[in-house]
Image 1 (cartoon, one colour):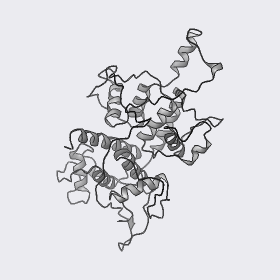
Image 2 (cartoon, helix red, strand yellow; image 1 turned 120 degrees about the horizontal axis):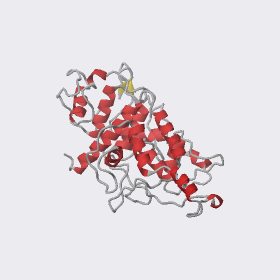
Image 3 (tube, one colour; image 1 turned 180 degrees about the vertical axis):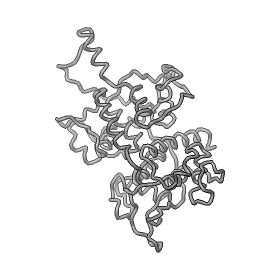
Image 4 (cartoon, one colour; image 1 turned 120 degrees about the vertical axis):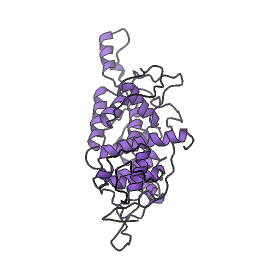
Length: 354
């Protein structure tokens, strides 16, 4: 365990795994078909009012728009597309780059015919699943699901909608309906983006770092049912317990010790995490080799130097990290680092662990 003033993290190794497909085991993302709930009296029938139908369609979010916005507007990526893979996506430009990032991270995939269909619409259930995965939320039947009139907990999307509900997203209308099968409107998508961006403001903390390691980089945290950590500031059988239990058992992050080396029984989930501490966490989670290369600019004698250098050698951080060692890491930066880490881990696995 660690002393609270320094917040050191003891080493061990975390297992890595790809995301488990949902929707009945489908390997294709965005395609979890469920009935669309509509008001028959308000349906626009083909040929009856073509202008109204076109306007209605233009107000619906598409696969391409959602993917592009997540990568550029939420996570703040840039760069050019280097690995175009879908037949219906131009080999250059923002859309290609966005799809490349999301696909390499394992968040999306295309169709069996080699297409991505960027202009297809998405429904609210599908987007709930995607947001849960990219933000690293623990998908489970959260208590707030009981307020949804139209979501059965046995459905594949229930746990994802529950995850968003638990994390403060507006999921229901005035009648208490989450409308999982309804196409997502542009306005609703803007609301989801605003919520995600609001949650990425300020410094990252230890609790969300544990969650990102467990849910984005690894295969998922420990089961919530029966979960206990022994930490006084982590409630049993909660989503936080799931993540903290995982990183603690795997030696990636641990609780605090006092000045005499005695365990305090606290994890400090709301405490900020700095660049040095984050480097150690991600180095251990990814089992990156420690290095003396000096790539990160860290002082050679610093306790975190080899962790930073190893991540820098792997291309996960740059040479500015050494100078920022004691600075708190921003939320958006640590979320993006979790994505980059997942991409790196997936590539390593595809290359046979090399």
